[in-house]
Structures are given as C-alpha cells and as structure tokens.
Image (cartoon, rainbow, N blue to C red; front, side):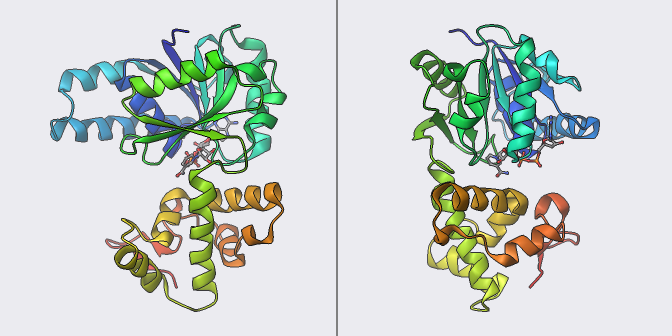
Amino acid sequence: MDIKTVGIVGAGQMGNGIAHVMSLAGYDVLLNDVSGDALDAAVATIDRNLERQVSRDKISADEKAAAMARIKTTPTLTDLGRTDLIIEAATERETVKQAIFEDLLPHLQPHTILTSNTSSISITRLASRTDRPEKFMGFHFMNPVPVMQLVELIRGIATDAETFDACRAVVDKLGKTAATAEDFPAFIVNRILMPMINEAVYTLYEGVGSVQSIDSSMKLGANHPMGPLELADFIGLDTCLAIMNVLHDGLADTKYRPCPLLTKYVEAGWLGRKSERGFYDYRGDVPVPTR
Ligand code: NAD
C-alpha cells in the first residue's frame, strides 16, 4: 500500500514533531487540533526546529521550504478522512481518543489506516470500536520526535500484515528504526521506563533524596543522559500519571501504583516543562528544583 498523505490529530509536543519528520520525508501532512492556538504554535515550532537543522547543515534551506509547504493545518477533524494514514496524537485519555475515531469513521476512505501514538492505552480496545480493526495499530514515536531514533509499532489482536508492513515502510522512509511490540499495557519502552520514573518520585516522596540528588545519582551513577525527574517534566507529569494508571489497571499489580506525590503535582497543574513548573520551576533562566 502506497502512503502519500498523513493526517495527524493533536498538534501538541508529539503532533508537531510527527508533522515535522513526516513532511521532511516527503509526505503531505494535514494537522488538526481542537485548539487554533495549538495549531499556530505547532507551525511556529516546526519552522524553528527545521531552521535549527538548516543552521547545522543537516538539511538545506530548500528542503526546509519544501517541508513547510507540505504541512497544512485544519480545525476540522473530518478533513483528515481524505488521507491515507491517520496518526492520532491527542491527549492521553481514552475517552478523547475514542471520540476522535468515532467522529472520523464516516469520513474515511476504505483504505485509510488508523493509528494511535498512545503511550499506553490498549490498541486492541481502541481498534474494536472502529469499522476497521484490521487496519488499526499503534504508531508510537519518542519525544522529541525529530531527534529520537525509535518508533514502536504495536499490533492489535486483529492488525493485518498489510497494515503492519505499510507502517513499517513509513518508519523506514523516515530513516528511523522500528521495534515491534505486542499490545499489552504501555508496550515496551514505557512498561520499563515509567515504573523507574514512578520509583524516582517515591524516592523523593519518602525523603530518600532531593530532586537534585535523585537526578544527579541517575545521571552520574547509572549513566542516564537525563535524571528521571527531569525526564518526567520533559514527558509531562499528566502523561506519566496516565501511563501509571493504565499499567496499574491493566496489569492489576500494586507494584504499578502511582506515587501520591505524582498525583499531587498533576492536581496542582504542575505538569512539567509544558506548564513551566513540575519537579523543576522553569520560569527563570535556570531550572530550580521545587523540592
Ligand atoms: P500535549 O498535551 O502536548 O498535546 C496534546 C494535544 O492534543 C493538545 O494540543 C490538545 O489541544 C490536543 N487535543 C486534545 N483533544 C483533542 C481532540 N479531540 N482533537 C484534536 N486535538 C485534541 O500531549 P503530547 O505530549 O503531545 O501527547 C500526545 C500523545 O502522544 C499522547 O497519547 C501521549 O501519551 C503520546 N506520547 C507522548 C510522549 C511524550 O513524551 N510526551 C511520548 C510518546 C507518546
């Protein structure tokens, strides 16, 4: 199956990154968000990030101009029905994602492949509520999308080989590397990463270490490029909490219970970098630990 056009739902930090790499690889991109401000911000971010690649001689000015020209935005979700591949990258809440697919269904072409960039929600369950579970799968990019090499491809129970191969071919065209994961809560990367981040929050909650000592311990002692709390702020604490809840509910094991301190930060609206405050306060020139 030849994919030429890609529809992306959600123009947040993941959606804009996905639009960036897809347009650079030659796909025509149609980007949608419920928020007009998010669409404007996404186009500005993509422009800035492509410009950075030009200044580092990674791409030419002509390649940047061609990529920008291939990106169109629309506030109307159903416009995406005319694309060959849809990647849903909206907020990590099942009801939100389910409503998006429901609204899209009557407007899709018969061959359109539906995918979700969800970090944790069951692909099989999302697929089962559509008219095409065999043409539905998980297409999970890592953050920041233009930088990170991996894409997890997740098969739902019904995903057919043609759909999987078509998505794998897209990953190849992006110059990225695919890892195949079966459809169980949080797949591979977040099944391993999120419990570590949650444990770092417990370590803070129990007073074993401060934000700074926990992050520098893991950077200098385990050779991680970022500390777990810094990484949690980067991912978004709401997303981290949502993934822990999916692991806890889906695997019914108390080892996945979200740390109450993580819940408290989310309830405060301290969601990390995107809201300028999380385990660090980003409102000044340098990030300052909040505990
Ligand atoms: P984000 O909060 O930056 O962006 C989400 C966007 O979705 C917002 O712009 C919001 O306005 C939009 N949105 C909400 N409801 C919508 C709807 N009904 N229709 C259209 N747009 C809608 O979130 P994000 O970090 O970009 O995460 C998006 C998805 O990607 C989530 O499923 C998340 O789990 C997944 N993901 C996140 C990361 C990460 O590190 N943040 C990594 C991999 C995957």
